[in-house]
Image (cartoon, rainbow, N blue to C red):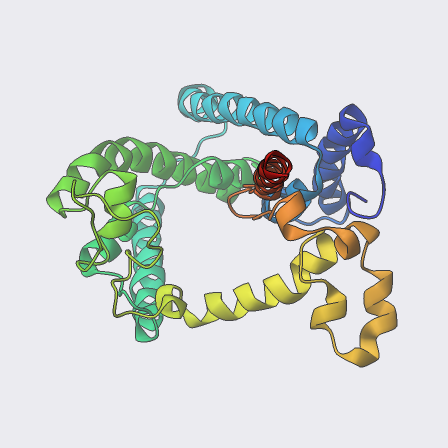
Length: 323
């Protein structure tokens, strides 16, 4: 809808449809007796990566600020509700053995995800994920609003009440203890806290300028001069990134290259049907190169054209003066 219609000409309507259609994924999942919370999670990931780039500038600002506000309110409400429900909810059922098993299984499950997956990623990744980063990833496995929301959906039986009580305790203890100790553990593992320092911490070969900061024009300073840029991500991430750039973004957004350029020649009729006029006619330098991850637009052609026209006028003036 955001790609093949002109709804962007009506920013208020566009923003309303964006919100309502996002909420419809929750309603559809609930009607199909599936998990609406997980549907909203994946809908948000797709909306942020694809739909956001099709919105008008006004809708981008409006929806981003609105969701930031809703996120802030919902996050504070849910954690307040978790704390209050521990003392006011009438259907708690405490089972010390089950609670202990819950904490143990949560830790084992976290370790079974972090360490084996990091090992697999490090096979084809350069720079590697250091051991102290892996330990911090394991420790930062906080449980929060989603687990609580899923546990409180059904508390009819005693077993479900036990699950709710255990989940609430795990959420409260991990948030308070692990969340409160995160900064101290970062210093203990010698992991830099600043964003730029965190990026550079994976490499010791960063290129720096005279004042000790990395060269902004050197995009490979994180990896070092001897490491190819293609190894910055894991194999699966590179494969998906290439597929996403060649097929998914041209299909769902106005991104270039178009499907006419990436699909086989035999698929040209279908590719032409799925390619908009804006994709066919837009000029990357004139209309801006849109990056769906950073949502930045670079517009250089207007200033370049102005400089050229200014130079041309100066040449004509000089020529006329000489004549």
